[in-house]
Length: 310
Image (cartoon, rainbow, N blue to C red; front, side, top):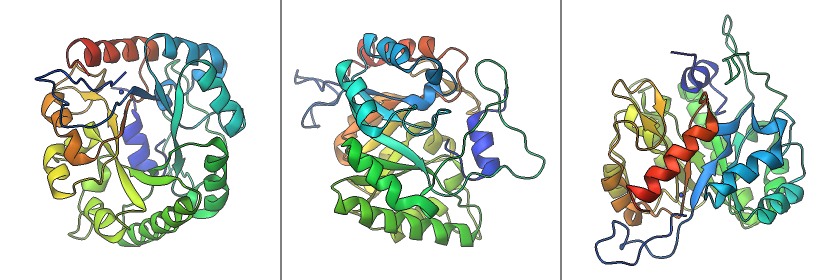
């Protein structure tokens, strides 16, 4: 298997790097959720591809029926080489809403001896300098406010040592306060490493308990949580309303390979049926480093619409 993003992020410790129109028909899984939730896409799925033709890529995404976008890292820097307002306008012109944006929690570092993962083209990824919340928090919050997005999300922050966990919690609480002041909801996105105990304590449990419940929400990556040994439905019961954002991807039987939604082993029906207790407001399809991003998201939205019937 290629050096996938999970291994890259876990080694580096810093890079992280649904229409879900809820049916009103009797018997729908989603009758317990009020409002409408469009099918969204996390653009990290197209990392290394989108920068070659941003408008063309977004046009294809919109043509498949995706209605919301969560942006991520761009090799062009900024927002795919644009200002926040320019990117928002492009998405709007294509019939999509720019809802959320991912940023790093701390500076990106490759550990000694580590190599960059390869992209869909088989070549090592080239990562431009990226701002992070530890060092550039106010600018990142201000940029998000300029774009008028609802959510700013910490894609990843180091949690490998007690000191890193403490620092991450401080950064998250500080950012949550700053985002609140400009009318943006801040959230934290997980991988599976946050569920690995550090000195007998589970980092994710500490992130939940030691960050402000209102200012710091969670974007639950369902697949990484499951890989980390968690049951998302039980998490929703334990922390109701804390998970307004989800990432939706699938895993093979080994829990090592990411697959398009519906083509793996995750049973999404009970998870989506618990959307109300989670407090879910938006969800984003994501596939880390797929060989063919367009084929992957085509398969995923087909499953969500035709089989899961969201």
